[in-house]
Length: 94
Image 1 (cartoon, rainbow, N blue to C red):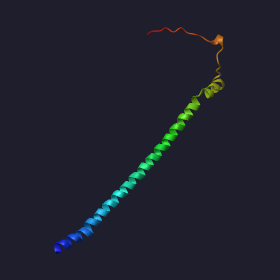
Image 2 (cartoon, rainbow, N blue to C red; image 1 turned 135 degrees about the vertical axis):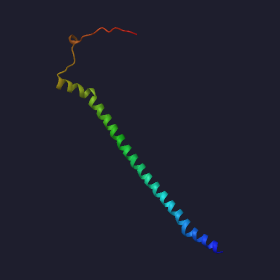
Image 3 (cartoon, one colour; image 1 turned 90 degrees about the vertical axis):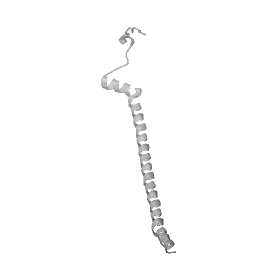
Image 4 (cartoon, one colour; image 1 turned 180 degrees about the horizontal axis):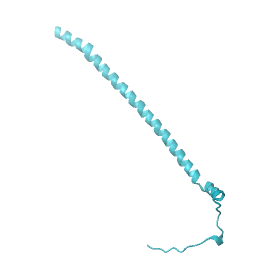
């Protein structure tokens, strides 16, 4: 009977609290991992939004509606008239 009492004591005061501690530790690690995952997802979402905004800005800056007036203003360029066009012969080599 004494051996059973000692085993019960070990089970109740050592093994059971250790198992509970292990479960608590695993749950806290899981929460930390999920928080990190959420942070990474948020960062990715922000980076994607910045990428989309940058692509949109590039399209606006490279658009004909913006480039033509700037070329006229800053570089003095203009649309050529018929007499200003020069056509060069192109030799086709397959």
